[in-house]
Image 1: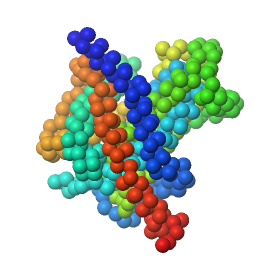
Image 2: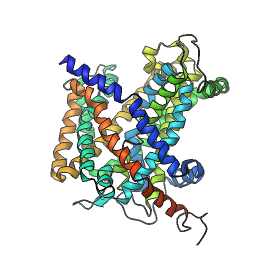
Image 3: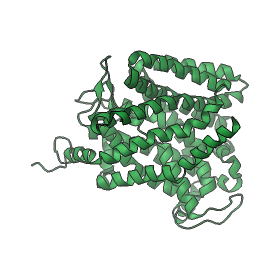
Image 4: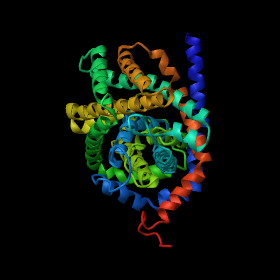
Length: 456
């Protein structure tokens, strides 16, 4: 069994090295070129249409939930524990320059997420319950006329959710263990909380996410901002390090072992790619239910998610790590503990540690709620709504077993299953990029949608 697990781990490590980075970053670059790097050209307008209209109800269009609710549901999936513990690991092995590549990759990847949501809205349909449903399984089927590829995506995403919820639960269990709460108790509590929400359907999920996501992100960002302000004198030199060592190697300093340019690029690109799920195909599953008058208008919220997830939450984690100097003193093997140490050193053991602990717990629970919904929708697409209810129960059992220590062997398959959904989705996005471009042009060339467009 050990040799088989090692074989799977080796395959996983290879796939998630250069091949997956090329697929995700390269695909995002192709889409950015095809769309005329619209994410830079219209950045201000996109922010106005999202941040400026978060609380505004859509005036017209079809859908089940509001655009903001759909965005917070997708954000609940993307903002996870890795936003806190993954960034310091990237800095520990790639140096401050990794942060620059994280930013660049997020901006390039926004073209992928935009394209996913545009196609998700274009090819969405109503299920037998009268709800709007969509995602890669639908646009690979109807848009590419490759039903088998849509089923391939749906099947592997449905399976991927099992080890995914189990691994997510471990973070909650480990946090609860510091308070001497038994694993099985915390696992049962998480499963019950998630069950109450997901059995309420998309309406209850978005009702929870639209309140939980702003609170949990705001709490963490506020704490990180306080720490950064306290160390504001370090910020100018830190920014110089980020931009300088994105293109030049960095020598060892203090406990930091040094980093080559290739390490800064690979670590930064990896963090920028994995933190916001751009290219994974999960976001359009949530966005397909949104009320909107045009696919492009809803797709702006995908860029909103990247701004919040990577450019705000991940960036503030980076500022905390860099301005406090912990990246130079804490060993790379303990990099994941840097945020907690930073918060505790300046806000006190209980308050600082409490903010990080609560943030991780909320991030994880919100992620589990949404990815269970994603898995349910894949089961519905493949086998109908009744089987979707069966899979929902399976996911809740996986949450409990993951906390109790019953399915560790499945963790080795997680990254391979993720690759199995990313590859068909990115193939579809690249092949259908002209459809996305047509809809993008239709929006920005029409004064009815884009006020600055010239009337024909």
